[in-house]
Image 1 (cartoon, rainbow, N blue to C red):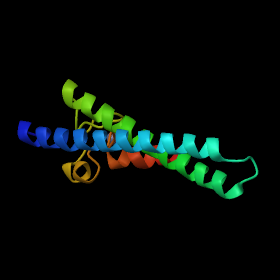
Image 2 (image 1 turned 90 degrees about the horizontal axis):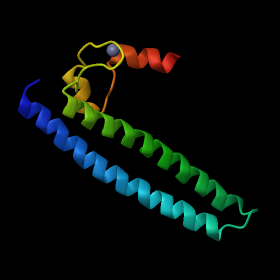
Image 3 (image 1 turned 120 degrees about the horizontal axis):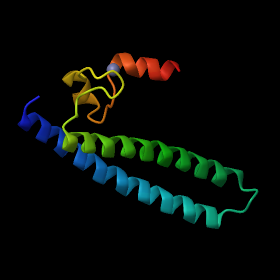
Image 4 (image 1 turned 90 degrees about the vertical axis):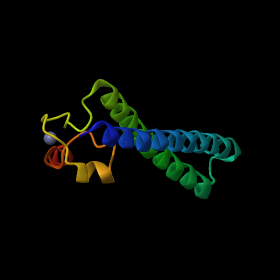
Length: 112
Ligand SMILES: [Zn+2]
């Protein structure tokens, strides 16, 4: 991978990080507001809160992956599978620029 390709991924990851941290923050605020407004037996609202919590957790996980991908760019190990050390194909990085593992290792992780 050359420098300009790396820069392009870095750009993409930076944007993703900014967007996700904004979204996670908004969701957390929304959850807090809903929680304050909710009476204990209000099933609809608590379902809504639970859905928001799930989304925010999911986004927080992706955000953590994005941050470590940026760290890997800085340490020069971006595009290398963190599990097996093989190259992560660029076709995969183009879809998921924060992918930490190759497809083979992803399957192993999901199975375990
Ligand atoms: Zn791997």
